[in-house]
Image (cartoon, rainbow, N blue to C red; front, top):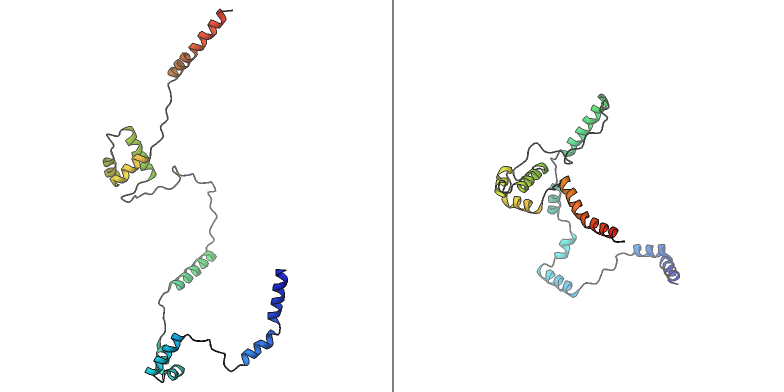
Length: 203
């Protein structure tokens, strides 16, 4: 039902639309929008101060027009030109030089820590390798490697080093002694053997 009503309303709005548009265009001047009372009062005060204010608005001011013609913008930026020149040079080089295909087709080896380690490290920073090293040193011997010594050694802030040592640890792998393991198993099986032997002795 709603679609039918909207279709009828659309057709009614479009009925004789061309003739109505021509009638609106043929009018000498469109009807201005009504003004608010405050706007009318402002206009009255302006006309009292300057009765020729409306004439000045409708007249063309030659001085303002001349100033507008004197204003222009120039750009000294040659970035686009440099980009175009570089692209043209690269295209010309590609046409002249025939670059050979790479002879090495093997996949490069992965880095040890998953990224290329920098050759130079700025103060206040450390690599993953260095962090693992001083964390491990601190875990093995905290007295020889306190936070202050690590901070001086790697040029880091002492509070930062303390937080790293507090929240990060390296994994330790413990390998039990085989003899100790056999002894534990033997002690665990002794009660079972006693129960089994007593049950076999009593028919």
